[in-house]
Structure formats: structure tokens, C-alpha cells
Length: 243
Image (cartoon, rainbow, N blue to C red; front, side, top):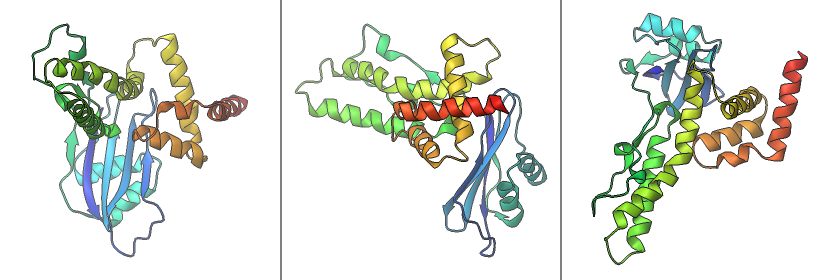
């Protein structure tokens, strides 16, 4: 995956009744995506995303053409009406990486590894800083509850493994959908469920809110698999097959 971002200023007469418009990539067929989000007042951040071999362009004409191909008129309209404030920057180092220090049987005393030194998550999901803050809070908790630093570093790394497991699963389960290798049975089930869940987002505010809360790590993924949510997904699946 890769993405290109650029700031624009929209004129006062360009009226919008939304704060965020987005088109997600969707394996295996939809490999172009993007979004426009209001940053502060008249400044907007517009990002174009490429997956499965697609690479968004950085020149103005190509940037607009790519946005127009997303079947989401709000993004190209904002680009056309807006004034570029920055160059277009491309970022392509999207791989997830987790160095599993928590599995080491021996660990140096009074040395801790945190943040990207342990785990790098695909930045398109916006979870890396949140995870780093949670790691800092965990370290603060352990320091506050001990009278000696002996053994604390290794306890921290082991607890860190538990903390990272959930955001890691969230990021990689989505990214692995682009892997051409046949998925496992559990991966197929997760993809099937997520596919129909995402189809509900444009028309179901409850599903959209729950999904965004999970993506932003405010709520746990279990809020997406309650009996009520499962029923909605099953109805969506039935309706999709009926058509």
C-alpha cells in the first residue's frame, strides 16, 4: 500500500455539510481509495490511497484524476475548489512489523523498548501513537507499583506483548486480505464478516459509529460482534445474496 497527502484551503463559498468523506480500499477488487477531512476551519487534508499495486500520483493533474476515479464526488470537488497549501507527499512504507521481545527468556536489566522500536503499525489506520501512549501508561503503572527496578524491564516487555496483540491483529487482518496466498478458515470468516459489516456503514449510523470507535481504539472489537451486530450482518448478507 501507499498513500499521497496534501493540504488544501477551501474558499468560504464552497459549502459542505460534512467533516469527512472517504472511500476505502477493499481487497481484492477495489485498490483505489482516499479521503478528505477538515483539519481546522478552511484547511482540509486530502489523502489518496493505493493498494494491490496502485500508486497515487503526486502531480496536481494526476492527483485530481485519481480522486475522480474513486466514485466519490466530494473529494475531486474539494480539490478543484481548493488552493494547495503544501506539496503532495507520498508515503509507501506501510508494512507492519513486530519484534517480539516479550518472548525472550532473558532481558537486560533497566532497559525497555517502546513505540516503533517494538511494533510499527500501518499508519493508514492511525493507531501507532495511541499504542505508544498506552505503552507509556503501562510503564508508568509498573513504575508506580514497585520499589525495585530489578526485573521490571522484562515484566514490562511481557505485558507489552499482551497490549500490542489486539492492535496488531486489527491492522494485519485487514492488510493480509491483499495477500494472494489462500487464507485460513478463520481468516475467511473474519473477511466475510468484515465485508458485510463495511457494507452497512454508509446507511447504518450505529454500525458506522461502532466501527470508528474500534478503529480509533476507543472501544474493543467485541462491540462489533454483539448479537445485535451479528443479526445486522446476517441480514445484510442475505440481502446481498437475494440481489
